[in-house]
Image (cartoon, rainbow, N blue to C red):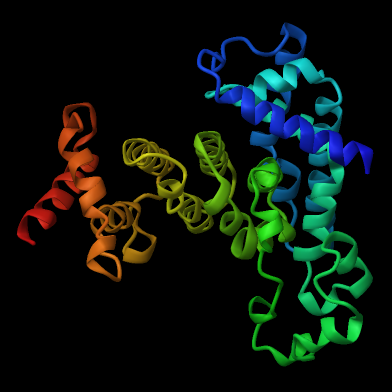
Length: 340
């Protein structure tokens, strides 16, 4: 209990310090030896998005076991790296406005090592269907929401998993507000960049990005681009690369200003183009078409018209620095706005 209180106090202190002018420097925040170790960890994460060992195995138990081994090694490496990040360094990382990729990984590692109970809570509550979450486990991480197990179970229909048409339809808990707070941001970021495994994809479909839509920031966007590049460099087939990367591409608008979002979308599009999976006959999987929709989608109500936010940014953008394919999609977005 004391360590949890200290973590909350540290979070409040660093948040307050971050508001002080002149406290946002982020150059060389890691000691040299730690910087090297963080770089090694980054390279391991990138190369183990889908490791060579996993990719070489046919689908089945052996592949699942190799994937699980990578998953477990990932968290072990984060704990080991985080244990070497001193509190003074951690505070500097927490208050910086911008971090290098290695610094971001070091911050994630530190907070994972300091508060392993956070990932334990996420895994206990969201990695399995809600019917499989025992009341005592639920009450441990979210105490007081239900007075007893009868009330807890009474909130949900008791339907066996095999009654659903597919495993994707089996109900999971939605992310509770307690886990959409800034204290949990690095936990969800860690899950976003974790090696591919059933649990990584399951959480991504239902929870990871739902939480990060609320609490993500510029650091989240840079980690997302890192993840997209890891996917592009992996041995996944093009369709899988497209699906996994596009699910990230659609989220950049949540994490920054319109100017930043446009830059991130274009960087993500460049990763997809170089990876050979940007264009697709299916418009729902075409990065160019989806960017066009993101820039021009009118929303459900006139007040939500996104082009009112993004088109002025597109107009002020220096198109000459972009390849013709990207210039074309931005010009198309502006032309659509002009016809309205």
